[in-house]
Image (cartoon, rainbow, N blue to C red; front, top):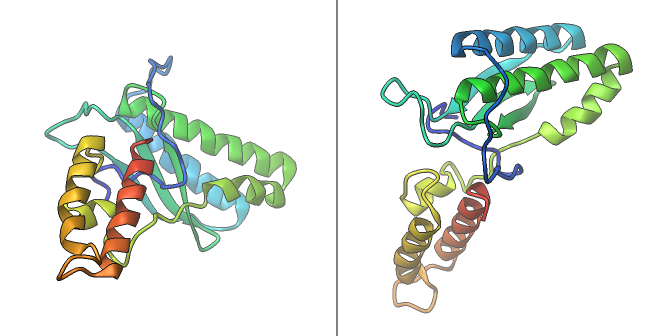
Length: 190
């Protein structure tokens, strides 16, 4: 899985608006908080957290992207999990919010036991929907999180070639395009 650009879980809707937070945590500290909290959760549960990937639109060239959402992907009890937050305007605030979500799971673990933590983590199971080895953006040939107009334009262009009623049409390819379009709309909250 790529850490850049942001790969949002298909099962989680996006927030349409973001707000300022009251966190006063810098990016390095927020990252360290999440790392430590995940390690402690793994230790507390007796199941090591593995394959941690922090996915965002943060790059050295653009430290304050328009989309400040963050998705933390990891394996726990041999299952892929994802905690994703896009509530706040700044990446570091969304990472700090994820830290607090993990700490809430640690509290549930301490006071309710492993079965309670497992129950709450069911909602964080998030295998990204893919068609084969390509995601919806790759199938459509567009930049991730392209807007509605770009998704529709790419779909129209590719589907006219793949439509089963055309001379070189391919029903399977057309289904793949339709699924990719629908997945892309879900990811942008449409």
